[in-house]
Length: 139
Image 1 (tube, rainbow, N blue to C red):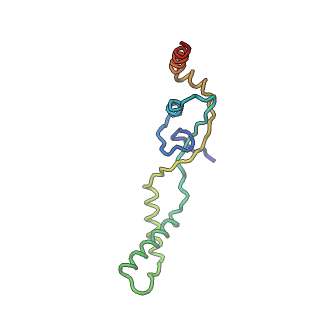
Image 2: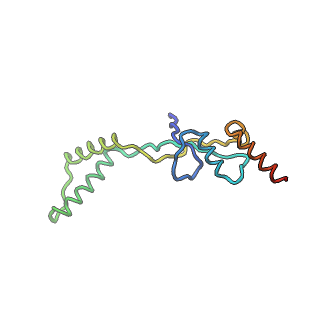
């Protein structure tokens, strides 16, 4: 099975995914912590794959449409679904699936980062600032 392409990086449980660059996400997350942990888990997110079939979606659309039409314009009996109606609803659903962009994402990768190593490589100025803060506390 083909691995899903990671589009976003963040920690687990975040509500809004903003970071397409893993290091940018790590920097933002770590910068918001009061203390840096030794290790931190970062998650890679990919868009969910739609599993609904056009036929299933078309059936739902057709049911809803006929119910609405029958409520407003129908008689005592419900309108019978015809093969032609089912075909038209499936064609409509196929077209909508081709135009629809999935937004929801799911975690497809987890990585544990060594925070000290990451900071040394990506944000060495944090170590300098930490040293200054530590020296000020000693005075």
